[in-house]
Image (cartoon, rainbow, N blue to C red):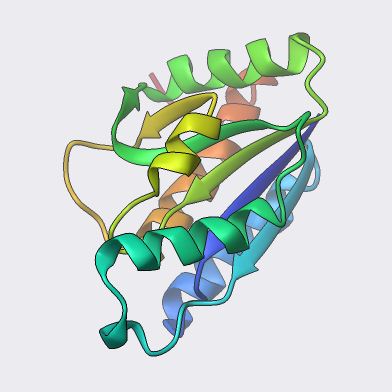
Length: 157
């Protein structure tokens, strides 16, 4: 199985870039992991929120295959503790899915069309984080999940 993380816009924050790169590199030891960055929209002042979400959806769908399992990182999604998330990842691996795709949306979330296509929603917390921070938190949690599944000493209970 491959895990793909699709991000909306790139980050300029050096700390996040370095942290993300550390966990992304560590993950390659366990699983195929790919990051896709969709370019941030330009001239958004001339667009309504719905138009922005629709344009972001069009960019997103260029990277999604019909066979992909699509999980949206969404504040209204299911919350897991780290062991539960590792169990979720294991279930996906056991199910024979080829590509498990997680998406961090734009500043206004996702269009109705994206919600309809999604196979599920995941929330990292009831708190709100910047889109830049979410990418780092998420990749660390995927790494943590893989170490839990391998019974390695990274995660402590």
